[in-house]
Image (cartoon, rainbow, N blue to C red; front, side, top):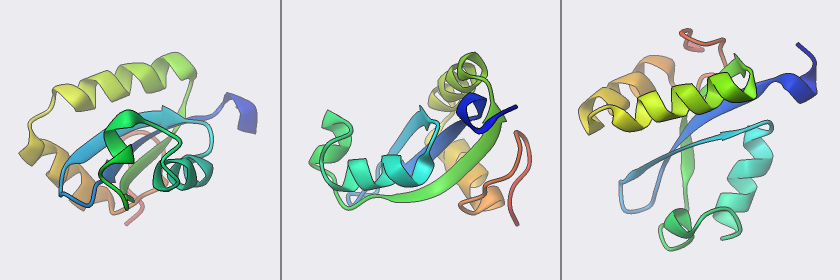
Length: 97
């Protein structure tokens, strides 16, 4: 896969403790957009946000499917996923540490 074809699924922890999940081709740029209030209505009023989960190696369709699967998870399962991976940058199913 080339850099342009690689999509990431990410999860943010908002200042109010809530979680937000999304997809992007550039997680660092997207984090800056969220913290600047330019990314989503949800995070705009819940800044600052931090990345607690990041998974790479997806196609766009694969990333959207994984995002939907994560959004269906319970909060507890999402927190466990984030804890297991750190703010990982591993391949799907792999944490960074």
